[in-house]
Image (cartoon, rainbow, N blue to C red; front, side):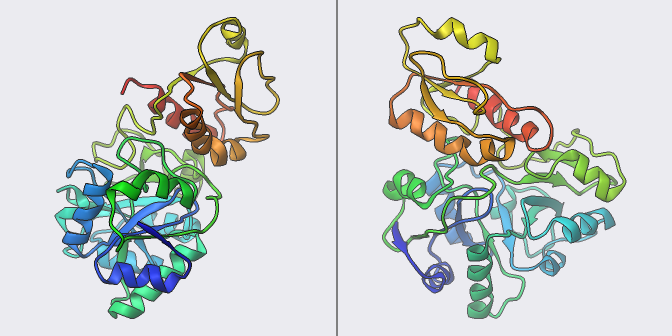
Length: 323
């Protein structure tokens, strides 16, 4: 994989059936044409991703959703009208346009419109190159399967250089502004069902749709395995009062916590966000830093549950589960 500086180069690589790592507002995605099974196979190979794990199709416009789905409920359109472009993925009944190779063999397909200007520009260029206004880029997080998602182009190159070719590219769009993956909502039944928490909260979904958003879906979705987002270091979620018991230990320990929580003696401070939003932005870089420093353990004091806090706790819980 090699870095490129222009959206045109990224779009040409995609059109030719190669991989292009692209920034979104959430994390960097490893992109391929969503209509090209051979290119999609390269994503699975580079990530070491199970073939039954579905991908998210990134669309150029909200209107393109109609080409990828059938029997789309009104509440899905309500959500797309309010939150697209943005960090929300909708799972809808798939049309013939969505092949098994991106749906994991399910009858549904996951779609979203990213708010990142580079992703939008590359998609528009791909539309022009192919003449297909509804073409999509399938783009799971640009990291090895189950590992920590990348929030910079440097993270992508460090992790995937040895698993890709010189025909594959990455374009630097800076640090991701949200920092954790999109909220995923199952829209295949008569009401919305949360598959993965993210920056768009359950409360926001319910406010827009006027419906209860439940969590009882059986649809498979990205980033929902019990163990996921995992560094080499062991992650443990702790309360602030529990930090003191680690002060006189012999382990090399890193700390992730809001700035209001002091760093106990002997611990390595990995980040000091001042809000839950900053916590999300800095979380994955902090987990990667723990491995770069070869720390044996990371203690994470989770932020409050409101807003994006629930999504942060979800990521920490999965990162802390046994690998």
